Image (cartoon, rainbow, N blue to C red; front, side, top):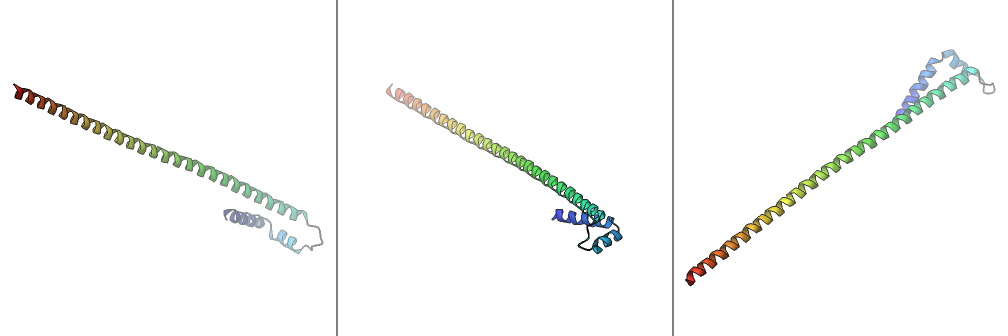
Length: 128
């Protein structure tokens, strides 16, 4: 839509640049009469302006696409970084739980060993 609007404005400005007499003379020419040099010059200017507008629009579109792709890659890298951070946090919590469980198991084994020693000591004293 922007391209069409720009093209309309460019056409209007070119037509406005030509004098009213030139436009009237172009309109009043009969169809059998060969077009004048002014008509070709006017059409040439319109085509040049149309080409410039179209080229500018294509360049802007390519730049917009490149910018979008760059932004998309940047967002993806940020999402991957967040995901990796979350994975590291989960791994740290998992390791902490394993360490706590191992420490609790070691404490339990130590209590069992002490209880066994105490029972053996009591049995040994009972035998004396």
